[in-house]
Amino acid sequence: MSRYLTLQDVDVSGRSVLVRADLNVPLGSDGSISDDFRIRSALPTLEGLVESGARVTVCSHLGRPSAEDPRYSLEPIARYLDGLSRYYVTFGKGSAGDIRVLENTRFNPGETENDLVYAAELGAGHNLFVQDAFGSVHRAHASTVGVATLLRSVAGPLLDAELTAFRRFTDSPEHPYTVVLGGAKISDKLGVISNLLPKVDQMLIGGGMCFTFLAARGVNVGASMVQDDMVGTVREFLEGPYGKRIVLPTDLVASESFTAKGANRVVGIRSLTDHEIGLDIGPATANLYADTIHRSATVFWNGPMGVFEWTPYRRGTERVAQAMATTKGYAGVGGGDSAAAIRSLGFEHQVDHLSTGGGASLELLEGRSLPGVEILERWA
Ligand code: ADP
Ligand code: MG
Image (cartoon, rainbow, N blue to C red; front, side, top):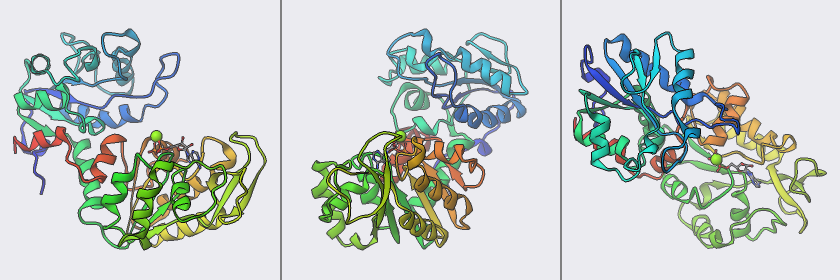
């Protein structure tokens, strides 16, 4: 029961269809594609449309150029898609492929201004707009909102799958429901905590943000990362009606050196020295978190449990990733770094939902509506 139309509701045969995909992939310093997850995720929608007899044009942004900049051209992305696809993928509006890839939308300043002239240029010659860029629908841009005011618009399968998955975490979670939060900054995730805390049975906290919680409880966190200006807010969560749902680490892996190579030790949470930095959750905490994940009917995870980029501090994140992959409950992962951890461990196909969107997924979990989705509802 969705409030927008999907491809199932329209006939695309013989139609010219504009797809907004999320081809915004990370690029290496030499300009190569360093992670093709989003490109691979976008392809089934494009191929499905060709199979249904549509003429397919696809647009996306890439990086954050404010004007034309050859380093951010979509031409190499088009070539990469062509390599992956059984169809003929070409670059440029007038080209003759089964799937035509347009140049980076951000080359036109009208994109981020949601300029209707640019939106009309994008939409010209098309009969239908398919919004499939979950990672971009939290922004009101010409290729997410503007064009959808002008052309009949539907949600693509990837966007629909993301929104449907996230409804299980925000609207009607099956209980017991656990949310696992980590990552660097608590300020990024305050909105998520306040929206989800009333809905969860427990919220397991790890990563850099756990130290602001521990500090708010009066624990000496040594030289660990703390956001001082957030301690008051966090104390309100802890002392509020749902405070008991917040679970904090009981042990840590700590070092006096914020590097990959310093000596480290496992330490109980009350025994950190003033010079020590907590860099991962400890084994007792990792066990508790993994058990809790296994006992959940629904579980969502965002943010690594430690500085997982450094091998000695990877274990907590690995343990959580493995529990996410093996739990019988409905398991979803969102966030760039947590998704990367899941994929690098080979658990990509073992979790029920691996989100392609960072910012958009956080805004959904905050309970906010996304402008690029709201506009689709007008056509339903
Ligand atoms: P995601 O992309 O999954 O949303 P974030 O971007 O919020 O996650 O956070 C990821 C970053 O958090 C990683 O670079 C990691 O090194 C850092 N981090 C995790 N734990 C700690 C810690 N204890 N101290 C400092 N940084 C940490
Ligand atoms: Mg990140």
